[in-house]
Length: 206
Image (cartoon, rainbow, N blue to C red):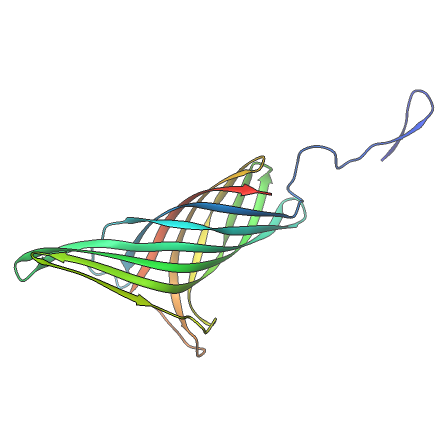
């Protein structure tokens, strides 16, 4: 915008001055924790306890105007659960830890600069599953690793939450849950036991 000063000299003002960065493209890294569990999609009596896991990775914010954007992410994410019960008269405890590569593809709504509301699909690729079993005098650990060389073989999830932006720092709160398994051959199945998790992270936006 061009304005005329009191001295008769033309002065140019930049309408983009200020601190609002909602229209800026940016990259960031983040890390934090998952509180995860599983639930029975058939609704039968199944009780499991939540467990904590580690999550870390990076993200990019791609603005579409001032109020909307797209935020793809790439995360290493640990999920799982704990369960207890009675087998042959003895109590047992089993802890399952699953390592995933999570790829959320989120739509971002930014009503104000300090808050971003996020929701969208997520594709999760299982890397490793570890089961620790303790019962009576028996203790065992089983680990399975997965190559996931077929990008179409994944778990389709939904996730959403909010990021709170404080200059370069980003505090994130999110929840997610599994929907179905993509089998890699064009078919899909609905798993009976599905992951659900809450996620808290702190990040740095460059």
